[in-house]
Image (cartoon, rainbow, N blue to C red; front, side, top):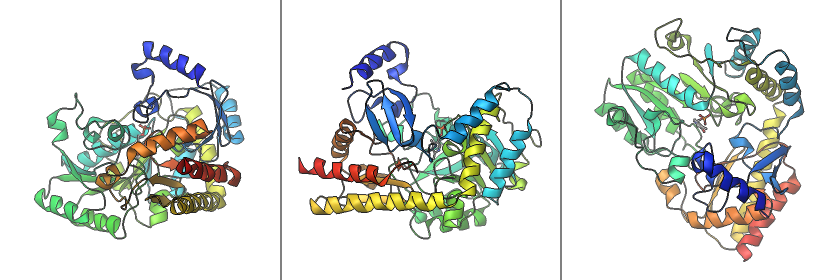
Length: 426
Ligand SMILES: *Cc1c(COP(=O)(O)O)cnc(C)c1O
């Protein structure tokens, strides 16, 4: 059933490290051969062997309205005919920035980049440049891209592959990265006191998607906001996953908390390489050419990437019912899976927020990295392959959130729920 994918994987490994251009795709922790995708439409992926899958990754978020979404595809085609890059400003970039500002009203200025990694590393540099401080706090199991400073106790692929320290990241860099457990406000308070006047930023996934889905406990983000205000620390929301997914205004709107700087990626590019960071003018005006915090990009604001993102964001803004529909579907899935777990008397934890969800074979709540890593990951890996073999594509790691897209039908969700039942009946 995976013959062509197996051949492609063999061939890929001759020319690409591990056969993939991003580590989680390699199926290393779940085992087996990655399936090579040929095309996708709506909620379904099609692989090199002609197998169809219900997609719960949505390219890790961007395909929130389904694959090959007509308005986006058409807009890209029309724009491409006018040349794919200029290296000079365009009106579309203004429209994109203006649109983002209407969706996240506490953003005065926003700079486009080409990935979530770039957005986060630039936001951190800016926070350091703005405060004149070097250290920052991140949370164990949160992932903010692969810039050196963030590769300390990071989630996503680093957690999946159990990489503790990254060769090539100097101690000089990682010594300025302070870490706490997610949801541990007291630990942050202690660090803030211990390093008074040294901390430039606290960066956080307001709802985590990179160690499974993890939800902030009541008061946690509010407490961080307060510490930042008291200590002159820049509060950075990494909304690369949550931005334009949890609500048109992202986690900021959904949770009613304003950050000082916000980073975007994934949904903002509708599947093209896009990221952005923005925030208060007071801070953003330190970015070059207004200020001396240098940040640049040859392809930043690329017209094809911009029209794709702009078209998608416009649809999301114009139709808030999308978020209600997505949430209703995700709740339906969560409830259905939960019933199956209860019926089979299997210990489980389902974390859901908006259209992000993860399931864990666990007899305890999953609230941080430590609790996530104590779940039965071997059993998740078996579930992954069972689902794959039966036409459901889950993230190939227990440390990743699932992302629902609005092209999913209730029949797709029912099939997924039924497959869990079959899996547990084996
Ligand atoms: C995916 C992700 C990033 C990195 O974005 P890339 O586009 O992969 O560089 C950063 N932060 C979060 C929260 C992410 O989920």
